[in-house]
Image 1: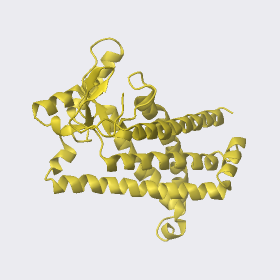
Image 2 (image 1 turned 45 degrees about the vertical axis):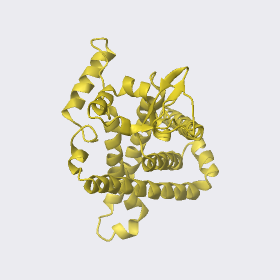
Image 3 (image 1 turned 135 degrees about the vertical axis):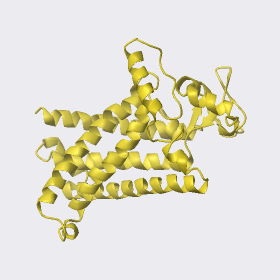
Image 4 (image 1 turned 90 degrees about the vertical axis):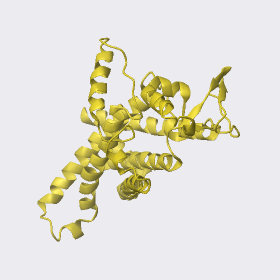
Length: 289
């Protein structure tokens, strides 16, 4: 893809001698929130693993790099605080935009909703049939079923991991009205669910976003906020045809992604991918040694 910084939003970009248009997929605030969520998640993972596997030599080395176990704990809490702020801000923003625009129903139903729809079940079944060569690859709308699963996994993690983490962060406050055994359960839940989240994000989510053949070696759309017309037709044909049919496709047109935004995606996304792979290897090593 070529890049430009002065191309008007309505003007197509030229790619290999062909006309190429781009469409807005993510707003600026959505991109910033995703970047903050991604960085804080990696921070929580790298600072939390030495505490879980404190008996491992690599954990002590990593803890020293983070300023000791106390330093790792501080980094863990800072990242957790920022993550909670981002999560709450996202929920507030979703409902504020929906209420301000009189589109509250769209939060729970329709092609723009992240709530699972009946069509997602059909897409899941048809995609499995395609995996085994028993049917054509399904065409998707704005959100795929696996993207919705990833989205709601964050809610589960914030309530289960975040809730148990708050109990461990402020034990004196919660001990005023909770029995002591609750903190033992919270410590167990926090560590086990965190490992589950790290394992899922650094394998399935990273695979879907970066490693699968259609996206290898990296999908930078979340960093640039723009998707090419070719990608949109290949990956989200239902959305493309729906917007064209409703006369709203032209309003989605945007300038091609800048070189700076693409490099940001490659550097930040690549660093997160590399650190995620390292974290998975350390977990697997610790489990089997």
